[in-house]
Amino acid sequence: MTKASTLGPGSLKLGETATPREFATQLTNALLTPTFEKEDDVATLDGGNLPGLDTETWELSGTLLQDYEMDSLEDWCFDNKSLTVPFVFTPSSAGYRSYSGTCKIRALPVGGAVKTRNTADFTFPVIGSPTPGVIV
Image 1 (cartoon, helix red, strand yellow):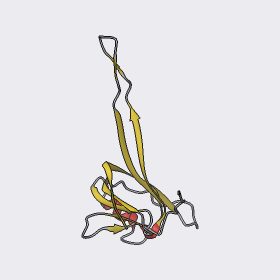
Image 2 (tube, one colour):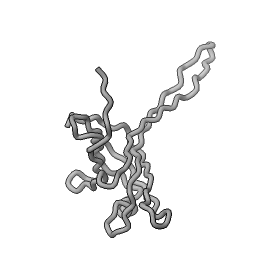
Image 3 (cartoon, one colour):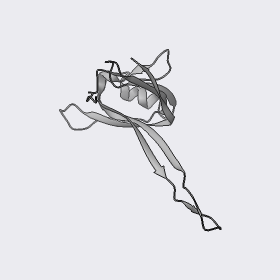
Image 4 (cartoon, one colour):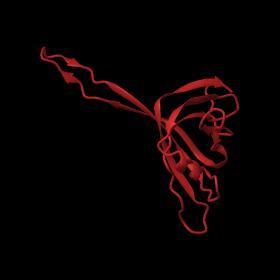
């Protein structure tokens, strides 16, 4: 029997295991997304074809509510931009899997429309493939 699940309550922790930074309190959207690309087949002298290689890449992305105070998530991303850090993404703590891996941090946009609750979209490339964890 298939059932539909909802995102949350969950967790997204980035950084070293002893001092991870929790992103969930400001996230309104979170995704762990695969992308697949297939190379063209290669013709060979004997008239045959070698199948093109498949490449799989992943990214960790989402939307967070901006915070302009000191030590905000935007500040953390700026201070750690271009670093590769471990992550653990738990879409729901109601008996579902977590996913872990390593991603490359990018700086986030800051600002937006006046007198509104601004958000920032982020995309962090995942190094290799994430690893499904134990059911929490």
